[in-house]
Image (cartoon, rainbow, N blue to C red; front, side, top):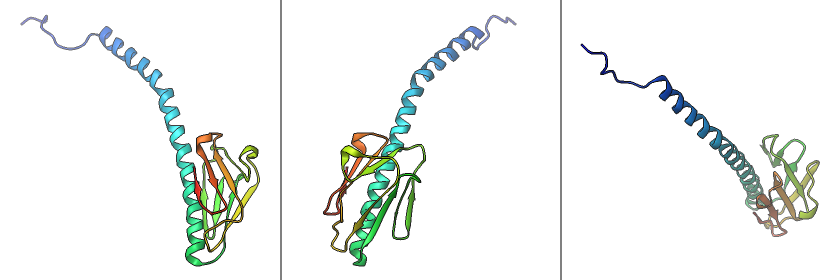
Length: 143
């Protein structure tokens, strides 16, 4: 019986494959990290938007004023008996003028039974202009 007819990979072939996989992973990892962070930012922005819309709907359906408050220090949006918490590492800024957004304190808006609000409000997530939520006096919020 001859030992020359063996099947398998040599140590050198295995090391070359491991090196190629390592290089490809090093290239792909930063892209994946950016994608993950971007997805989290969009998720937080959508959650804030949906929270504001829910507060407005509650004011209309219950025919009473509902105050929505965004606490920038604690990363929370609260209205009625609902509190939404956001990750601490996501920067949230807010003010009634888009050019003067701040990242501390609280901002409140009152939704009235007719669906309108008592003031305008801008909320931006992680300093990304595309993730700026605008609430106008009609009570409608959008990106």
